Length: 259
Image (tube, rainbow, N blue to C red; front, side, top):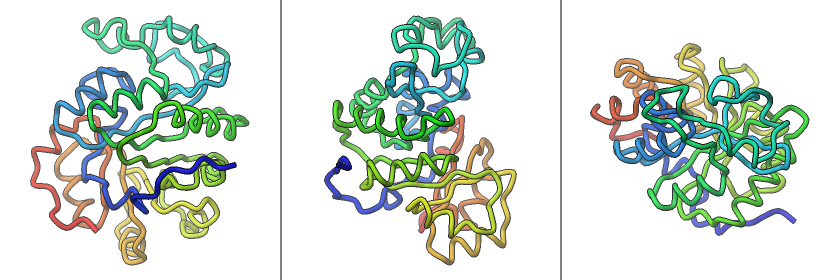
């Protein structure tokens, strides 16, 4: 049976803020860690985006890469390490000695922290290929363990993951992530029951964006760290931008009417 949540808000996009902290305030703290999430909240962000994958024992964890090499003092694939093994890793020293001993968060850790900080979350589903359904199951289990009190949005580049989310967590708004906007964007959204489209700032196409905006499809764009690009995107009808430096963009006059 699909896990149902109270459908108080038909779409997460009704509550989406123009500025979303990308992996937390990841320009100033190690990405996807409690430190980055807390800093984003301190800076006044209402939304944070993080990446969710699973450990060898099927626990949902907050981590971007397939392997732990870049963002910890460990080596090897995330999917080949148990949660107990992942929890021994230092996920902060690679960024700065100041952040030594930050730990990889489980999704339950993150949900509890975001409840405390009153943060809404965009959970990007980042499954190991072949483990899409298991990743969504692990997310469903975490959401049963820690009921989330704020707005939740799922997104993924992986259409199988989005379809699994549609099947098992149907009440949570979904978005398709792409780099460049595909010509068949409407079909892809339909195929995965997704409401929104998230694309890369480098691939901004004013004509396509105008069409998508006219169709009433909400858009968010990653990763935007300068004022000029953010303003251009908001004016074009983009609802939100993901940024590594939320404080920079929160200092801007935000769009008053971001449909």
